[in-house]
Length: 412
Picture 1 (tube, rainbow, N blue to C red):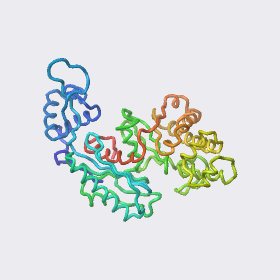
Picture 2: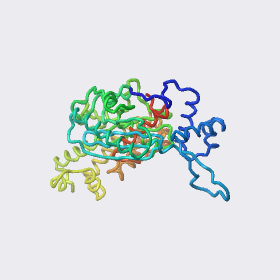
Picture 3: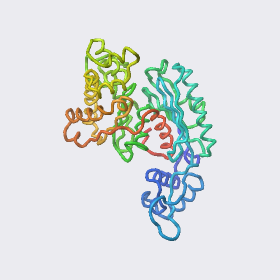
Picture 4: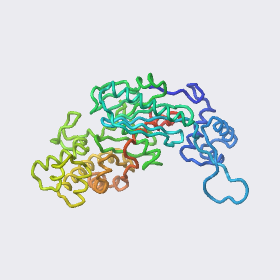
């Protein structure tokens, strides 16, 4: 773990600093608050609030402006407070086998920097060098924008990660990424606070702060793309499990005689519903001479999810069969999670959801209602995520902001 020091460079948080953090957290949660509103929401006295607000304004951690709406008549318009644009910034890295996305976020959540690229190497040494180099480029850009100090760098990795130690335990698709102490390496190279976490947990946090899960205390985030995973938020805290590696939703068995999974088991949800699994199943049916308009598409080039979606809309039976099987497998898995956690809301995201949205959301909802307890499923909403490519980089940067504000949601 590579934790930052507190706001004034001490590890012990005194009452005054704790109160400052309470005010910052309240401003972040609600935004555009007057001093009186900030006092009421934070539970601090108005006198204490006013005194600490002046300190935070001086430090650039809060900004003051006019309320952007309403009629005020004559006289001075009420001023409102929000997190400061000069209060600092965080860098987020989103690493997958075939892509790297880098994002810079200001303390107030404003997007400052974004870059997406396809790494030319998957080897551990080359990838580590790339992460450091791209992080430095992002830091250089954000620091030139006058946004205050670097608060830290977060990294979301598409693999099995123990965020409490900063270790990447396993990363399918990236050779050599086993028991890699990425947190320590980034800390030594960049000299700042580092958080390394599972990419899907980072995505869940991004949805919580800025997307479809905003305002929710408890929800499940399910990602279906090249891999399948979940982020679990319970009572405003990321659920990590005893060993810190919870959320491996893609590796629950939904069919005992199913296809081989990258984990070594058969019939895992990831082996049934990921992008590769859907394309492989389509190819299998085409090889079995099942009639389909996709045969011509497959013969002329590489088949895609978009092709399957287009064929299904046009009434292609093979495409419809593949999508039905995907919905059934996903619905079975999600129904089990709903019965266990009673989350109230499930967020579905990833390229499978993006490209097959016309069918997936409605189809999964139907299966869930058939396969889970009626009392729970009738009170559970299934939504589509607000973000697509690079969501983990937003969440990884946000993890740094959460730590800076001493928010317990990280559960580290």
